Length: 303
Image 1: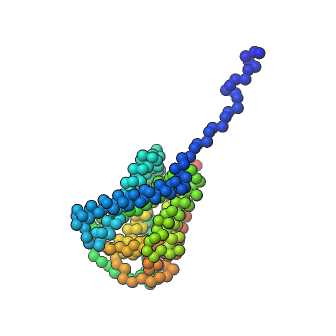
Image 2: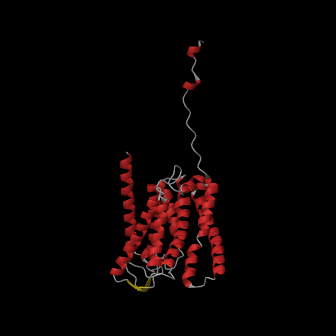
């Protein structure tokens, strides 16, 4: 047979590209177990660290011990960063300043906006409860140094929760599952972490899970872990350290304003704070709406 009638190999039907195998460690049960292990081990490491600080500096006053509680989350920060650096390098790179392999929304500008958004959301909820007559507040002594130290410690705590959930956990789940499922599982896990907090109610659990849902949505649309950390930090700081209200059921021992009296209503939970009120549900819905509009606007500009 003449050579010209032979079928060249390069003209044969192309074979389908093999599907990418998703790591077993990114399955829901595996990610949840790894997250729990990082959290529990991190709490032990952080507890040992802050215990040494308390002994070394003789910290015994309630306000100082309260800050040590927040600072103990440094152990979770360290273990999440170490684990992702060694085992989840793409996720670790997404934590850094905006770069080719990092989160495109990780900028100092987004961090600053997150601080304003978190403080504004919480302050609005508290203002509405105060206007409704649910809160009686008094002004304490202003201590700029303590407030600055508290902001750093709260950022450590909020950063740990965000690194663990919106950072590692959501990143691992999105590698294997659709974004909506990854965000939902992440939000439920985040809510479950607060189930044993003082004064937890059905509505407060829903709001905490909704908080995780909203920030997970931010991660999917804006890819800004820094924004999530800033919102979380400002929310906790304003509620607990500035206004002196319960933060997820935990009462501050050193704050600028002091809570003198409170009552339960649709706008406030005497045991759980504004996180047990419908106003928190509303501001979280507004946050999701704002993120959706921003994401659509950016998409339209790119097109």
